[in-house]
Image: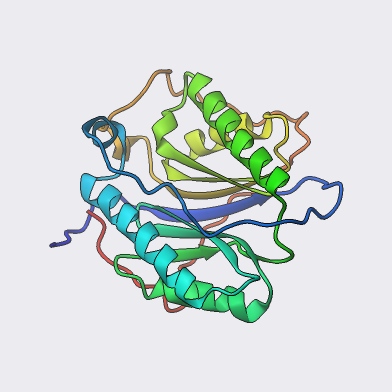
Amino acid sequence: MSHTPNPLRRVAVVIVASAAMAGALQGCVPLIVGGAAVVGAGMVATDRRSSGAQLDDQGIELRGAARIRDIANDNMNVTVTSFNRQVLLTGTVGTDADKRRAEEVLQRTDNVRTVVNEVRVAPTISFQVRSNDSLLVGKVKASLLDAKDLFANSFKVVAENGTIFLMGLATRRETERATEVTRGVSGVLRVVRVVEIVSEGELAGQPRQGGTGASSQPSSGSSVPLPPMEPLAPPPGAVTTPVR
């Protein structure tokens, strides 16, 4: 498959917004592929990623999960999620060495541009917490869909122990607005944004959904404060490929 450069300038950003957490939660999480599924025509038509990137993301998640499984031990419970060939690793491992190994095997996976390693060295989380995370993902997705000034398909939502990870391809305004909406969802303890930022002009001609695009600032009353947005430098050794 040939790769041609995309004219959009993409800047990957990771923002961590922390809130006080009532205590350590423990339990068990299996190895998970972060959303691999057959891409239908409707999804391709409404997704800002190219069809090639969507297919690559599915392949990355499947191959990445298999590679993690090859090195896994009883204390390694890792989720692999890919969006636009950028990989997010979440879950728990027993040691820092296991965390590094998980990142290294994903960096060597075909078509991966960058790896954002949010794996924690901690005990595995319980089935109840895992179930709560699944419910939280549904609540956040519904809230993003209800926000008429957002293109909800721009974001992929991942939950881990009350933390919501927002992955996507969006403008800075959309990213701030999506974060504001997510922070307002009951049960969200922390928001981490792994978003490729593009300008409004760069999105001209791409599918949009509802709203006028008016700027909206985060509510000062939120219990999940945000630090300033900072660019994310590609991790050492990451495999980069042209983005179609």
